[in-house]
Length: 315
Image (cartoon, rainbow, N blue to C red):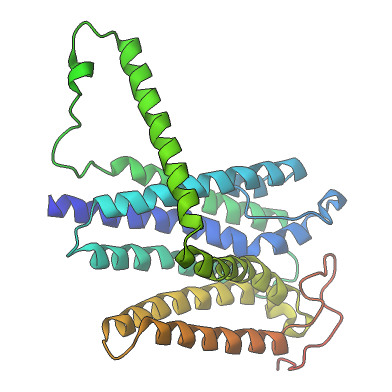
């Protein structure tokens, strides 16, 4: 059973590796790709990480529609991931399994962005053929990751037993499914009540600003930062290739940072508060360096590159 659980965790991590190789790479380059499209109907729109296939034959309505679907799908995917990881772990293996999953997931930042670097380095414009090749490759990776979930197996020791009421031969199938549906609805209502009760607790209230900041920071490095690099005139012909390099370095930072902070938290001399403050200082330094190196108009230019100069000019 332990071997099956470990295998499940590895397969889960590999599935997320393929899916997020496509997803994070798409998020890193999507705005740059949209800028290269010769279509005025795209200007002024908010382009979120859409379904990979939309970028092969792009259209405005598809960007919006698939962005909504991605938001709904992400909620279900991460909820299922957390439940499945816990189901396949014990108190003695949860840290190991979480570490294995995290390492595989964060490797997704490396491969797609490495492809972007080699394909875009030296380019000033993204051709239609290059765009289609990239997103077809990402689409294949995403499909492979989704299909890998079909290999996952149940980890519990026995099959779910029918209740005595459901096991009665006189009870029709329709009544059985109705009973299950009612039970599921009651469980859902109970879960929602529990969630709202948690929202009122002191711990969640104090954590809420941190969670909100995490969302803003994730949006910045996964979409805005790469776009700014690609639009910076001072980087010259290397600007588009540097988008891939920035994604790779973000991935390396997440892998090293997650492992380092995990080790620090295991050391009794370091409290969690110390780790949090260390992360805060690193964020301050990183954003200050970005402020010095990226022109003011980098996030907003659309049809051209930046016209303003950064405080520190690249050489």
